[in-house]
Length: 116
Ligand SMILES: [Zn+2]
Image (cartoon, rainbow, N blue to C red; front, side, top):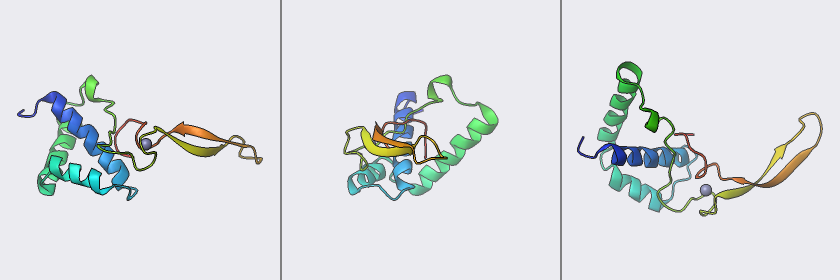
């Protein structure tokens, strides 16, 4: 209540972005420092996530505006240096060697939708 809806959603987006990188051991000191400033108590953050999960599952569901919160990285993206794109290759036909390569949206900072 004290933070308000918009700030709570903003923090949830940063939390999702941090977790996305953390799962791949890609957080930087800058990103970890901002995360620790935003969530100084790990115990309190754990408890908040438990209560949020319980309220989503059993009580109120998710507001339409909050269903697709983006995962936001608070700092320079360690995957693409904030260019928003990464070089990649992908298989076109699994039965042959046909593949393509080129730039695609950065998986870390350009895709939404919570933790990886
Ligand atoms: Zn990126």
